[in-house]
Amino acid sequence: MAELAFDCVDVAPERYGVAPTMIFKLRIAEATGVRVDAIALRVQMRIDPVRRQYADREAKLCRDVFGDRSRWGETLKPMQFAHAAVMVPTFTGSVEVDVPVPISYDLEVATGKFLHALNFDGDPVAVTLLFSGMVFERGDTGFSVTNVPWHAETTYRLPPSVWRDLMDQYFPDSGWLRLRRETLDELVTYKSAHGYATWEETIIALVRRSAEVAR
Image (cartoon, rainbow, N blue to C red):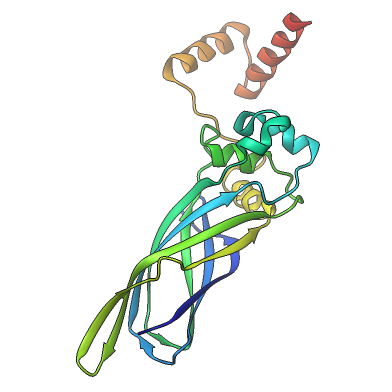
């Protein structure tokens, strides 16, 4: 039976994807020398936010996710990042395989808020990869199918700059915010009534007006 070990050796933005996608490069090693004919591999990824330091600006922007810094001892819990699946081809010894992972810039999703809040040159983010699936081997009596061991996992330190580069590729110098249709209709009415040329001018005007009212 195959004895497998998993490593994540690199993560990079997909340069020519239809939608924002990260490519996780996995190295899979087999220790006994048997030939692995295929692996139907599933990967679960989670972010472990407690395993890094946060600058004051990051802590301020993360307040919507974790609350005030004084509560972080209770609120910095692992967050589900992504699920992915890939077919691993035949190999003996070791093989490297790319795992495409679609990434959302939806700032209503906790991981989107979290990654958006990080300084691009800040500490790496700990991403734990948990593996499952089926391993196919051909022996003297025919094919055998075994499960990827439940304890198979690895950790990758993801630089925030990788996520930022990916979003800059698809949303240059901009972000994405989802609004209810009724809210959008009100914004359209406000924009038209005040003669603003762009949505950015409209939002800035509303923010400044709010700040004046608060003062």
